Image (cartoon, rainbow, N blue to C red; front, side):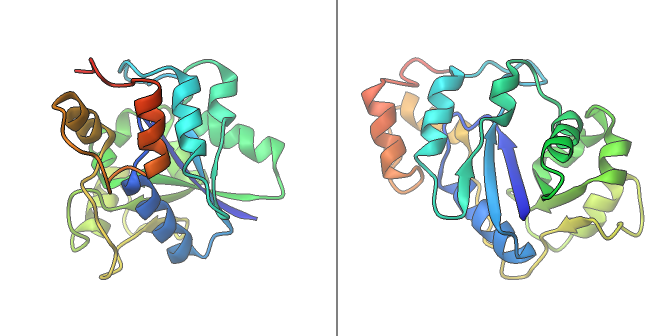
Length: 202
């Protein structure tokens, strides 16, 4: 199978994640997209308990969008290159495509073994918060390579739907007592209310 992986904190998961996942599946004709919550953040950001983040992510599952606890089960900070190497060892029958938001490109060269990651793995870059016009040269600059290798896929289609929804935005709205209807799946909103999450989140 061809599987796209959308890694992140999912603190909480939101409609933006699903918009991105759906389009990447369509754009690359993938079989599934895995939403993969991280155990802890490589850059030391504090996260809600993993059990809550995984449970909320599972509430977003569809026939083709699946929640994966692959990084959570390791119980330690995961790095993209190590996760992909482990996946290739354990599931050699699958092809994996790691999805990166364009907002992450500015720090890409700080990622562990970023040159190996770029050279040996399928990477999908989707636009976050900006248009697609300059996406390809932006990716080339971040990866320090031109032209881009064939296993690097900028999602630069003119009809791509771009969203600025983020978990930070959702937590901020909750902290201010604002509605999150239509930007977070209904089942996730109910989970947040049931477990009184993000009430005192900065």
